[in-house]
Structure formats: structure tokens, C-alpha cells
Length: 225
Image 1: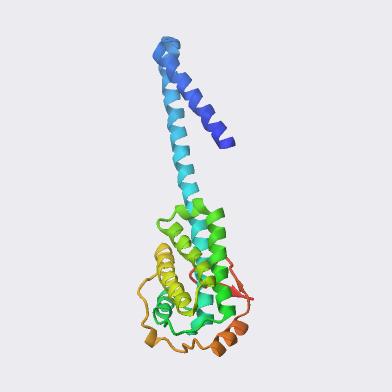
Image 2: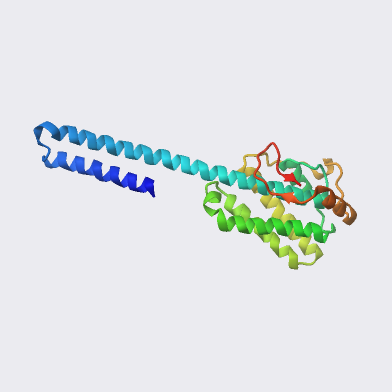
């Protein structure tokens, strides 16, 4: 509010000075000086407005990237519990894992709960961070895609796996692109320790702990506690 009031004062003052100069009310002595002063004030106002717009846009983009990294970490954790592979993976490995998911794979209730949590957080982010998400092209659509994971709760096994795989493929690629990370996926056959069995899912779930969607960057997708 203060910035709006300050801008309005500068605008009115510069407009008034320029009007006095153009109307000749400033006289021969001060007319030109007042016109120059009004023009300078208007130039300052434009500069301040431009700098403020740039800084505000950068702040929104930083917030959007922070949210995107935290979401990618949460997705990575859920996929790891489901499929295995390395504990911490880049987007390429994550896309490779997702590409190797089979419709015959099973999803334990605990694993399904992790994906429903991803959907819940995506919906909450869409409700509270829309402006920030819009600052990076395509990121809003990624969160809308992740929100669709909520539908797996009411689907039968094969449909559940198919929908989850489709959503994850699109969302992980979209997050990687928004974060300017590589989107080339690693062939799933080259990824070690893949094991989507029920026993392995339960073991990884209890080993991994509860995911904490902390804001992080490329040095570490997330943390567990």
C-alpha cells in the first residue's frame, strides 16, 4: 500500500509540474525548470516501477522453484518406496523408473497413501500459490496433473497403476523442465535394485521414514525424518 501511495504522489507531482510548465503559469524564469523537474520525477517513477516489477517477479519465481523442488522430492520418495532403485535419484533416473512400471505391478496401501499425499499437497499448492506457479510457464499445469493422483484411490489395480504411471510421467518431466533439469530418461533396465514387490515396498516404506516436504534445491531433493 505504501508503494502505491508513494507512486501516486510522484505521479501527481510530476504531472502538476509539467502542467504548470506547459500552461505558462511558472513564468519565464521557473517554467522550464519546473517542466524538467516534472519530467525527471516521472522518469524516476517509471524506473522504480520497473525495478519493483522485476524484483517481485523474481520473488515469485524463487518461491515457485522452491515449491517445485519440494514436490519433486516428495514424488521421488513415493516412487522409490514403490519401485526401488537408488535412494536419491535425479529426474532422468526417476523418469526411467516410471517408464519401467508394469500394469501387473502392485501398489501397497502405504505406497498409495504416499501418492495421495502428493495429490493433496498439489491441490493445496494450487489453492495457495497460484500466482507463484504462474510465474514459471507450464508449472501450474504440472500441479494440476499431480492433483489427478487423487483419483487412484477409487480405481481397481490395473487402472490404478496405469493412471499413476501416466500422471507421474507427465509431472516429473514437467517439473524437470520447469527447474531446468535434464529430461532425458535413463532406461529402466540400467537402474539397479528395482523391486516393486509388496514385501520390498513395505521394507522401503519403514526404512525411509515419513517424508518431510522441505524446500530444497538440486543438491538434495528432500529429506526424511
